[in-house]
Image (cartoon, rainbow, N blue to C red; front, side, top):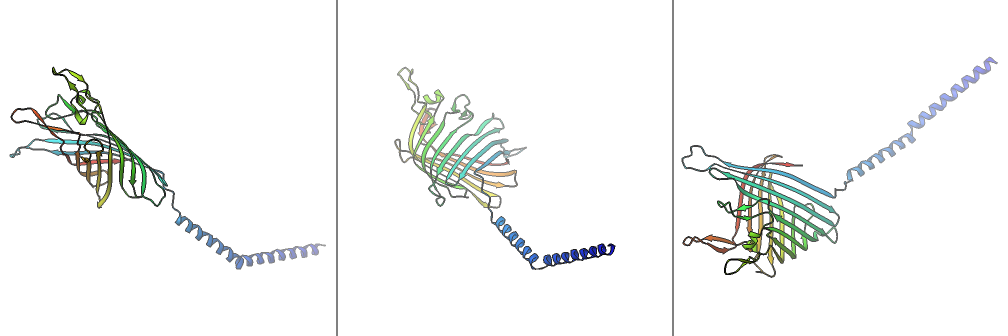
Length: 342
């Protein structure tokens, strides 16, 4: 009996050893190679799929930028003479853009405020802008770069402006003037390019002069006050002027050389009813040299021609102010500043 049990145990051990050898042969043979080939092919397909995958771009994009510019001139024992002067400019820019297939919505807020201090003079304002822009557009299909658009633009200033050295009588204030433009038209805005061209055959331009003294003088094109023969005011000056006309705007930003950028923004407007063909011009041209992420130099030019803004000159003989009509307005800036994006 003992020998029979031992013989059975030996037979079972041999059986399991032979089965293990057969399994090893199957793994080392063609079935195992086929399994490796399938895994390798699947891995290559996954790698190709991942490499060809393009993430969906976000629908919203933003720009937040703060800047501080400084220009200065100083003299010490300078035989040719001169006055020490320093000019500062604070600027802020905030952009929000929504882009989804055939819909585009661009929003922009711009703020600038500058001060100038010269030796022997009181502090003066050198720049003052509050501006808001919004353009909503829809196109027929993704192949077109033209959008049927509606545009909103608003502009005014923070503080009162003066014709120096006179500091008693302001020539402009907050909302005097204030400009509001509302219109519809077509905008050419290619994808992935920092440029746009907007053409509107129907734009309403509203000029606000909410300071009564400026409105009474007929500033910025509003109807002036009426006075009787004794100089008593019998009718207030108009505070709101409404015009309907054509608006064309164009803006572009280009990289000229390494760390050198050119930005241009121009708006042209003419009124259908009053002096059609006299074109109001507002053109800002900036050349920016970026030293690094935080330091830059800027050369800027701002040109304005507004047919509603009348100028006057003092007569050399009588000393009276003589109206001479609209004039080309020019402002130029050269400064080094700091910039911070967030």
